[in-house]
Length: 117
Length: 102
Image (tube, rainbow over all chains, first blue to last red; front, side, top):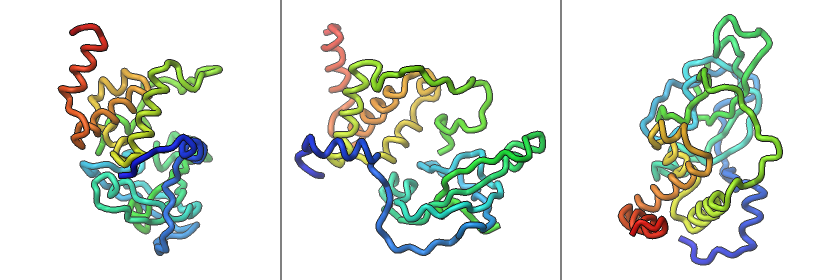
């Protein structure tokens, strides 16, 4: 635990949003263009994998780089740095055939949330 | 967890309606809550993911019926209690004094 918090430490944190980017050389399991399926994980602890996307098929749009993993961080089980991807899911995939054909949702997902399709 | 905070896809909540000219803080207690939470994180009492999870564990009715910074305050209190920095009895006793109840 650090001791003193000084006033000049505050503004940089508020303006940058205290990034959770990690400086770790971790291999990416996926790349832009890959077809993926969101895992059906229902942990009792913390996750950032929302229910509406689990088991759904999408396409990796972009690799954002490496970040610390909230699921393990909350459990005190380490930072487990890993790649985070922007994944595109069509509206029809998520909400059914009545959805507009051209609509899509892009959601940022950790490597551990995905399987290859 | 499959918590109340995971609202994506749920109907009935109405459109997102941003307040025009919304102030950064609606009241002084919101400003203090942000400062308290930020300080607690900077001093290493918990991390931002842990406070998110503490908010996820709120009673669902209380979660939906309370303000954004109420969620932060709840999370900060629960984590400081969980970590043994303060007890629930101490917080309640102080609250009662400040409210003029004792």
